[in-house]
Image 1 (tube, one colour):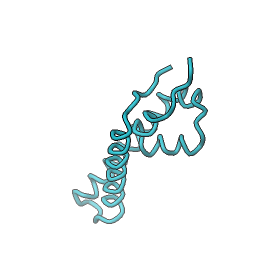
Image 2 (spheres, rainbow, N blue to C red):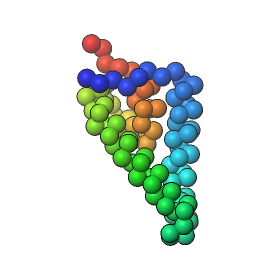
Image 3 (spheres, one colour):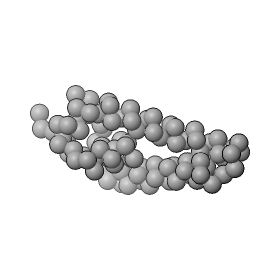
Length: 94
């Protein structure tokens, strides 16, 4: 079973803030910028990257999340924040 790296609380908070800002910038570029503008294109690319990479993390860490008895809220947070949420979860006992 592949386990996410354990991260210190400061790294978890800073990572969640950075990823949260990335989501906001991506949505701003997608929703608020004129179609065809550079910011619009960057917003779409950023959202595609976040969605793809975090969906991949859900697949990679599926066994870990199941063993850690992750709730639906945990799965949603792993999708939103990726490793910065799963890295703070208590690993299952071997």
